[in-house]
Image (cartoon, rainbow, N blue to C red; front, side, top):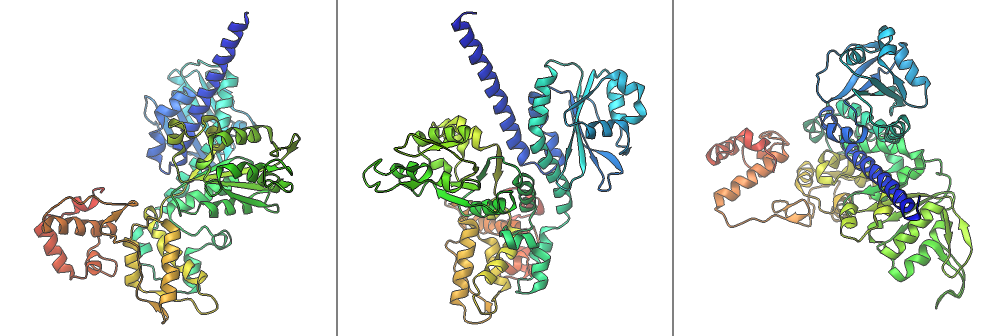
Length: 531
């Protein structure tokens, strides 16, 4: 083989491996946002592109682990035959649990001992499937789950497929746990949450704030926050690099503190650095340190953030603002696990867990040439996206209560008036949780009595949505009134009367609002439409 042929072969292997990593990353990112059965089943094209399977099944044990049921199926052609319960002691499930690797079962083996296999897999081999490849994994609450891939034919070798299955198990673990958790969470309706009183009482805190929230300051009971906390608890004990994404003010630093406290490095340092707040000429010295005399002003040796965080966690905030030249050096440190101070010639080994955060879309930054693709793949092994406050409004009462107590000082916490709470619920929150905290703190300062009856909001919620001013083109007063009434009705989930109803917020009787709706042609189907 000539050197040119060898180089081409090496290039092809590297390109193939990169494509595999891209597929896994894309699939993991889609799975990280999934909370429902239908959303998972819609992943069929992506799963097919990754596993090349014909059908996929996920079996989950009950909490007592006495039996298994089929939780999910992603089927290419056929429909489910039944959804029986199968004994936990059946051979198939025990084989999977006993093995640390994917287990392959052929048609002859399954048909010979069909009573120990789920009937849906028995039917699969009877209709022509050549192999069932399965692997067991533990869910959030430590129940066993089994993923099974059904193949009509095989196109790759066992090692390649086993590697793909194993690489996706951590994300699959989280996604299935999220689906189970979301199914339980939807029982708590938005109307119930909005009807909850805002008072400084132990009963409210007990109802809305689990003990670990107070300690770690991740406040909220919305389905999104429950899912994120579950994800964080699952990954906290590992050494995976995390990428926390979200708008400014959504709590990325708080999440980092939560992760560090739950990790095995919790007794060591958590070192933070904001890549956007330091001049490009100084950030290399801040990260890696420098030797005395290495540049003008270097009057003594400086220990960098990587060395300071040795044995602990390093939080790189706003990683998207890191200059390109330093991105290459950071990638080398992540790969080699050693640093070299500016002006030095000695490599220093470091043992650091990296958590990155950004408000930017790093995939867009990669496409624009502002962020290295190889560094992005390295730091986004486990992406977590924090929702903006406007997408988790049911958490506003809990957050308000938290900030009322946080900023009370030595005096009893004040209460938030119900009408003020309604105003807070309608605000678009472009500054997210940070903005809410400032509003509550300012209201406490400006209120003499025990109840806050007036608040100052930065912008008019009628004209603001999703961090930007809406483009209201010239229109008649009736058209404008119709838009505004629809806007309020949607935020009240179509509720017209009552304390949390649209009529109360608009300051008009419910009968008047109903008359206006009839006159303006506003029906329930318009209220349910997305804006």
